[in-house]
Length: 176
Length: 114
Image (tube, rainbow over all chains, first blue to last red; front, side, top):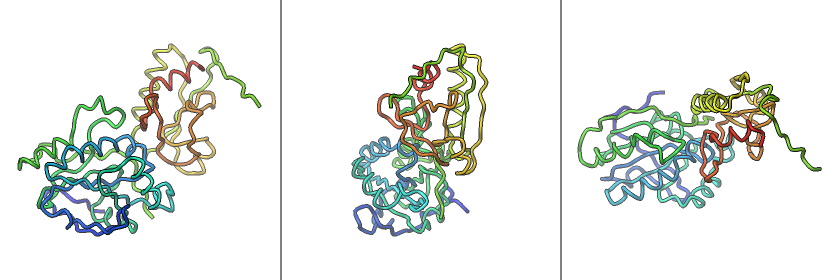
């Protein structure tokens, strides 16, 4: 499975969100978009979720939109089915769209393998950063490297991202 | 029926099993953490490491997700509601956060049998 590389354009998609509406990449035209392949059940996602919410809060005024996509097979992992996605989003008060990639085509097209796995696109929807959110899933107070935030700052300022690729850390995507 | 309180002295410890799945990256750090705490507690005990690869193996080993630590067969977090199966394990820490790693406190408490 080929993964998007920095400099590649984002693949377009239209997916159903937990608000029961269809969401397309085109909805975020002119915005930096942080796509995070995510899910409900994975402890790595759960450990980073509050930080995802905070990133959206901090960067929304800077024309950034975070979008979470769940591509896991909801039959293999019932905790990741669509109704559970709605529950999770309500419980955690997600401030970003949470979309269901039911046929897993978006994850396959992007080459995502883990949850969480970050793809940061600039306002032209060109990939500028891929990898993990920061260097410490265990403790947000002990983070030493804020990979995604640093990449966002560079991208917003029109600078090259100094570390454009890190290894995604998390659960594997559960394929059908 | 009242559950018997299992209180171990360090000398009573016979076996620690460390079970993991390659799919869950926290197992390296979890094993280091376990070894560090065993050293700090001055316990001389062998750690048996088991790579769990299938759901059948998970059930057979009473594996609630990666990583799982059993001390003389007892899970270090007996309150966990996670079922047996091949998955990454979520630990609820003392401050309520979820982590893919058991806390040092959790491991130490289980080692001391308190």
